Length: 207
Image (tube, rainbow, N blue to C red; front, top):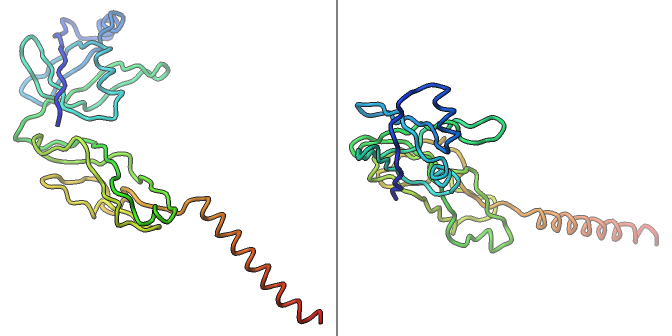
């Protein structure tokens, strides 16, 4: 798992008025919890945007007056209208304590079904992984090479070393389904066949 470093400064005051001043100054109120101490800090709002508007996941090392804490983003509070971040909760993590993170995944391999005209799809957006920090992947590859049309990979089919997946075991992760075009073509073929059959039935009667 990659680590991104940002700086944070301890807040002198905690409250709505102080938080508003920080935001007006381009800073974002935040809290770091999960360790022996809880830290109320302010971080650069622009730097934080780069952390959340990306499909990648990583650990975040926050430098608070020389004290470096390894964390993950646990929760973000957004403004209901502007959708700007108002407050961030960071969870401090430790090498000997397992954590849960939502990990992106991607499909690899050319499936049998796709070769027949099927369309690959994802059933989940991300996978909820539970593992020690050292074992936490930043991306998971899902091999769909053996999937035919109508088949899928479910959570229970995945085996990732030292990682427990917390999603429903029966949830579909990725699969291959019939394309709409293929379905429409099949329907047209069926109608043509029916039309030919009707014609063949009526011909003897006309004679």
